[in-house]
Length: 416
Image 1: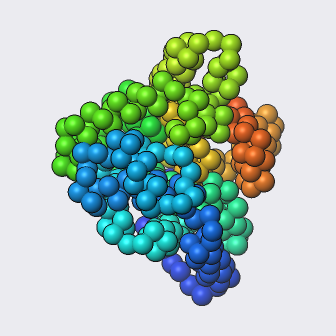
Image 2: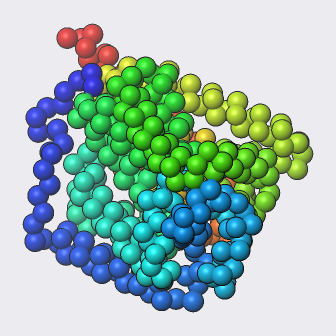
């Protein structure tokens, strides 16, 4: 990756030293807390109402050898009624390969499968702070740093719901680390692993298409091809056609609660539909969303056409991540989990006092993102779409921060 090398003392270390200190004690306490929460939820009366019930449903169909019927809604409803007494009226609409890889869990009783999947998510949550800290070491205090990870509500929501959003967070983190180390092909391989939530990964990959990062795209294409082959083996051609048909139905029926309430999404789609959905037709809404999404992707790709410094790269990665989230079709609160990477990267390069406007915009949005109660208030009032303007303010302020960083570097190079 053609970025300017930082001083030796500023380069992130490839090794992580873990000693017996207050940070380790805090990590242990967090592990006890999170594992206890998973055990409590697995034994609770509402575990069947979590999103994991839908994941388990899809995996169970594959486990029973009925892959061709994975997206048959009647088959899903019939199996759901036999498995759960209190399930939510949601459907399985994730890619076939996800159900295939999780099929072993479907051979276990539901509560046990939920417990195992929850503990896997806890492991990801606890490992990521250590893995990512060398690249965004703020705050310096170990307790404060861990607190930022624990307080970010979307992570807790993803854990409770049994969602795969923490896994997507891991995918973005590994992609970032690979790019920082100059391993573009490996970064593409990692990014492709996030295709279980393709609505976010594809816009992110599209930015690199316009940036002509062919090595990354080669790795991405390889992973996508392998996962496509797994999907074909799992459900067959008829199953894949049924999946495409289901996705088209979801896109054409944003008010169908079986697909998720659109006002409970922080995406561009959720915001435009909530504001204009009753004033204009759905075709106009889709056209507006598509046009703005393309504009945002092209804008970020154009602004990221060069990599002047490592600071510039970090901030532009954060901006691209945010854009990939908001342009995704469905962005529920748990789907915002990868946002913490962008937040930490911006914190690591937070503007000085000579840029009061940027400090205000970034500081305000960062504080709001780290207030847990805000998410639950918006969810209770079905106003999650109001997160979208905050995400846009954060993204454009970060974009301006990146441009200032690039301008300062260019000025220094001209002086010397």
